[in-house]
Image 1: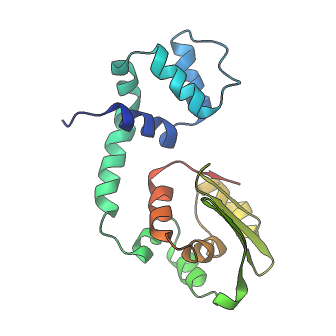
Image 2: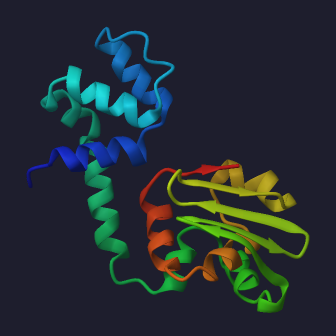
Amino acid sequence: MTEISRNEIENAFTGSFTKKELTEIAKEHDLKGLSKLKKQELIDFLFKNVDLATLYTYAEECIKKQRKLKAEIKDLSFEELLAKLTDEKRLKNGLSIPDSEVKLIEEGEGTWHFRIKNYNCQIDVNRRIIRHNCTDWGFRGKKEHILCKHMIKAISKIDDAETIVKRLILDRWVYL
């Protein structure tokens, strides 16, 4: 098996584990008082206080899955990538929303806020958060991590949309 680097382990912790799961790992090693730390601070603390072989064991399955998934999505088209995050109907409906119904409200470093019809779509790549307010998103999207038609359209309007979609596929994001 290929050697797994510290960087890959850290990326697995960042992308695949929730803060709660990382706190549980810390508790298993009698590391206490970590609940107030931010996620990255908690990861850094684990690397300082738990040996790399143990952290490797926690991250190994996530890393294997991520490597396999990276290979699977490497040559997919943008629409094929989106299809991994939604169903055929939502994908078709999202891409068919006229550009005239999409308004970019605000753009920052790795953040976008769109208005589509009467709905807000917010994407924060840095914090891996997607926030939206349509009914489909509220009933199904957030719970099942399925992009609705509005989010499909919003993401498609971002310059480096393919990279964002790959990150959505590979990492754990918060859907609000």
